[in-house]
Image 1 (cartoon, helix red, strand yellow):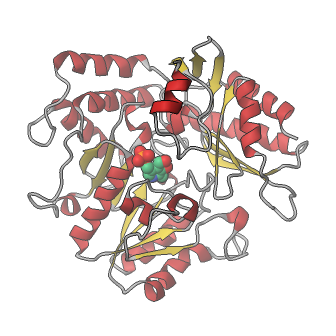
Image 2 (image 1 turned 120 degrees about the vertical axis):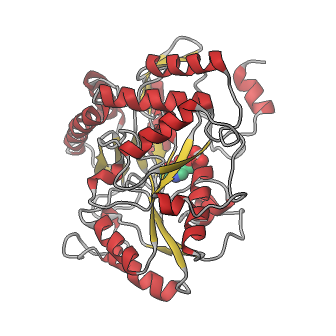
Image 3 (image 1 turned 135 degrees about the vertical axis):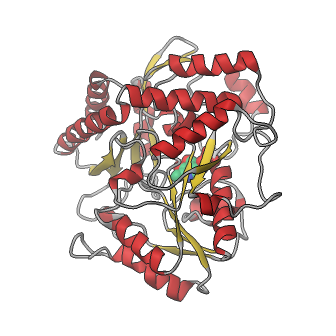
Length: 422
Ligand SMILES: Cc1ncc(COP(=O)(O)O)c(C=O)c1O
């Protein structure tokens, strides 16, 4: 049996509409090679993970050097240097007073921990989240995910979660326009707390740039208004940077685009350049509200992943990768907007840095979502370009490449899209 046949017999992929028919053999930088030697330009980075490039040498060396020492010891039972070093680094690169980190393995686990910490610190038990959001696949993270297509069949979910409309300007849930809307979607937090909760709200959680929901960038002033309302109600603000972090949006962390300091920040995906690692960081007084016995993770803070994580961040900093992602992303979006002139299917091009979405529509006036996303993804793959598809209507082409992608490769991607898009 070959790999694909073994997958179909032994790997549970029943939850996937389709596994992309590419058997990864090796990958380097922004290039992927399948087992037949076919080369692809990767515009999805394993769902926005390998920001520093596939098989990054600095990261590989840091991980190998740790592997030569030991793999595991439980980083909460004993002291481990790479854990301490990475935690110190995270305190340095995250905004304001965020200081103490808990490490887990994946995004959902870290979000779960952040929710628990918010409850513990505030003594309150409800949450406000956004419609169209995505926070993971565990019970609590699905409970705060605002998308029924992700949740169906998994309920009943955790009680005490109120949802409010997202800052999705292209499809404003209030049918308003920025700036005359005066940020109704942010101001609505006040009404949500007042009318949709019992008033015991521990935290408001949101992605600084929404990923799975369709690469949704909030308008200027959104998070400042949100934070102001949170503060008035003693509600913590949890920033879910799982997808938007580590240079992806043109800043080390996407929340830097707004003048706010989250109370808790969650990170994963791009944190360790492809090694499984997640984290949530909080101010000391919040972090210290955990008491003995309240939290732990056997594999959390893997010494190998933490060594890789530190090398990853140092690589991003040393090579000005976030700044370059900002430039390349602006260039790409400019070119895609140019493409929109000849392709009516492009309803919107948006994003920050190299977190870019192309919203496909049947008609620009009615904005009815197009159903062609999957077939365009397939045509791209045949042409040697790997892209993602997402959004609440499944009509967003997601361009989220390794950030080391070259401008010429982005030109190739645009040229293929020009040929493939109807
Ligand atoms: C914003 C956001 N939060 C949380 C998660 C969950 O992360 P993981 O799949 O590592 O559990 C994801 C995954 O896509 C995400 O995009």
